[in-house]
Structure formats: C-alpha cells, structure tokens
Length: 357
Image (cartoon, rainbow, N blue to C red):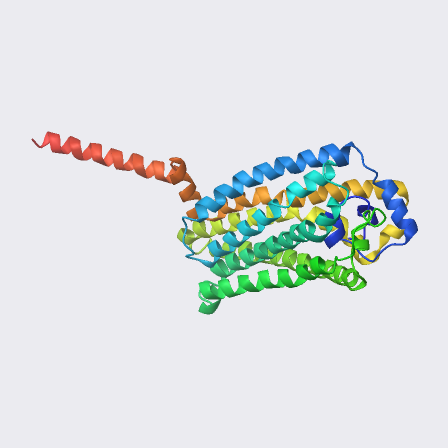
C-alpha cells in the first residue's frame, strides 16, 4: 500500500498492500508510529474474533444451504465461488488474532507474512472479481436477455470461474515462494525483508494489479447499476407486468453495490494515494499514526465482507432464501398468503358441499 507504517505491525498490509521499500529512516518512523498499544493487542484481536465466529456461523449455514441447491444458473455458481473464497479468508483470521494478541512465538509473524496474509488478500480480491461478475450477470439477464447464448451457459461460467482462481493462484503463489529469507530478530519487523529481491518486485507488481482490478470492478458495478436502473425506468411505462420482476433485479444489485462500497471502497481510498504516489515519505510521525489507524479500521471493514456476503445470498438468490425458510420451517410472506387463500377456498368448498346436502 505504500504505507510504511504497516511494516511495524501487520503482515496483512505488508504482503499485498505496500509500495516500494522505504528508507531505513522511514522504517524507523513507521515502527515508532505503530508501537504495540491496546488498539493493536486488544481491540483488533477482539474485533477479528467476533467477525471470525460470525463468519463461521453464517458461511457454514450458506455452505449447508448451497449444498442442497443445484448449479442451475451462472448466478448461483458465482455465489458458491464467493462462499469458498470467504471461508478461506475466514480461516486466516485466527493466525492474525494470535499474532496481534502476542500469543504466538517470535517467529510466528513469518508464517503470516508468507502464507496467511497472501491467502487473505488473494481471496479478498477473488471475492471482488466475483461480485463484478455477478453484476455483469444481472445486467445481461435484465438488459440483454436474448444475447449470445454462450454467455449464459453454465459451461462458460465454470470456465470463467476456473480462470479467476487460476489468476489468483498465479499472482499469489510467487509471494509465498519468494518469501524465503530465514526470519531473524532483525528482519521480523518487516515482511519485505523476508522476501528475495525478485519477491519484492513481484509484490509491488501485485499491488498495482490488485489496485487496477479494484478500480475496474468498481466501474463495472456502477455501470451495470446505472444501465439496469435506466432500462427499468424506460420499460416500466410500457410493460407494467414485467417491471416488478425487473425491479427486484435492480434492488438485488443495489445490495451488491452497498456491500462493495461499505467493505472495499474505504480501504482502497485509504491505500491508493500511497500506492501510486508514495506520499508516506512526506508525512511526519503523527500523520503516520493517524493513517495507520485509518488503514487498520478500513482493512477490518474489508474483512467484514465475509459476514455481509450472506446478505447478498439471501436478497439476490431466491433459491437460497426459499431453502433457508424451508429448512427453518419459516414461511415467506408470499407462501403465507397462498396458504391462507388455499384455506379460504377449502372453507368455501366445504360450505357449498354442506349446503348442497
């Protein structure tokens, strides 16, 4: 991220979020600005512990429900991919909690630098990409329902999903392999110091690729939402019967946009100026400290995505919500109305059968 204040503390920011390696003086300033505090050792571990438990419950439920739903559409298949990415991302939280709380051995940070941070960021951007694909899928289903059939096929969706995971692996694996410098008491403060020279260059390249990827998905989300809204507004005057169904698609993509803006936009707004401009070299210690807190809280919002994605499943996937209500023995409003109407019709039939006797 170019935020050298992350060097002193968290490998999460170090592995996928830094810009070029700062000078020794800047590293010292970053370490002083981020000396362990109650925020680092108590607040952050507790917050991530809460998210970890909530994510296990919510995504565990999602896995259980999706296990009973067939891959009928590309939309459902994309959602299942997000569940996998969220679960892998969730499983990295305990390592961070142990490290932040100071419960692990001195070399424990090397594990975070080499493995768990790479998994955290790799799966975070995988989720971002699939959110963009979901938006495109909604756009095609609403605005271009009679387009090229290959774009709507489940085979094309599976191939595209494999490509997404493949790109994630290609970007992430070198960060693991090239973090091969033996950890010592002198280099443990900086994940960059645990990388080979090629690993440092690869890491910087991945940072720029991820930043550009986020901007591209953000543009896709906004463009799809605007296009769907305009199409529904134009068609609602002519096709009233179809407009209600398409409004539901519009409301569902609003949920995606809301989750995306809440979780990912603040973090990238905090990160990008330093990624591309290296502004950290021109800031004093107090400014570094403020930005450190901003970075950590916005990163925590990004982590909260694993708990908010199930909201997308519920509001956007009718099969998911129906299965959830069925497994919970809870009736939806429409099912309750249909059941009440059926009871009333039965009562009417019984009445007329009785009066005819």
